Length: 323
Image 1 (cartoon, rainbow, N blue to C red):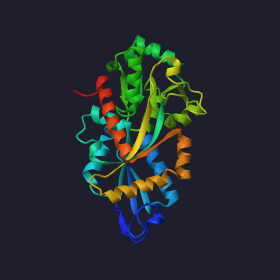
Image 2: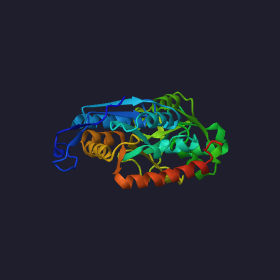
Image 3: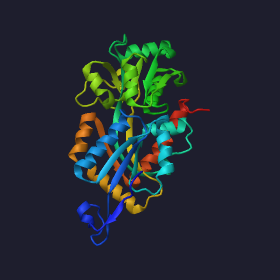
């Protein structure tokens, strides 16, 4: 279980919390980050990079990461919502994938039931094929997909997540009915990697950082990235460069438990403010080719509400919502 944030007599200035010096400060005793996915994926990488940053800066006495995968993060989200109310040390990593999964799975829990803290980062997605594949280019993949949509199986994260959405958007852009996308969902990045490299699916989609080492080692062939521009230092062309009019970035965020107090929320945001300015976090962004998209407060809440509406409409339009 999470330990609650405890009060101490340390002055606020010692922790950089922005409270008046005469007021008692909240010191982070322990923080537990719940990753609602199996190890190896982007949420897991994000949580562990954040854990390293918090440890490096001495922001909390103890920070741990646990995984609870399944159903695009909604199983972990349900556990978090139902088991952490009022716990100031409980946090949950999530993002765009979870928004889509909530809609497609008609989840009984959603992101209005947790406390938004911050958008952390964004990641360009990449379309890959196994090195042994006869598909050499994005054009080869699109040609086969248009001729026989069912013959192209797409492997990626959970149904309704960013990988699935990108496959649907590609279908829509090249004139294929998105409902005909043969999408194989995996609950963790590690499982998806194994399936793609093993040739169990024709193509794979994931965050570039998740497949980066396999691309560089030659085990996977990168066909296109989903961002507006190429990833700095990488030669993989964008979808748009190759005539597929699709642009998308997968964002990731962190949330706190339902029912926490305003001081607890401020304490966690202050801790994140410090963590994301650390060398440890900056190195993680660079190492994984993540975009710095840090956003807190009312601005993050406004962004979240707008993107939930946008993605929910998108997955509905793409025929991904279960009847």
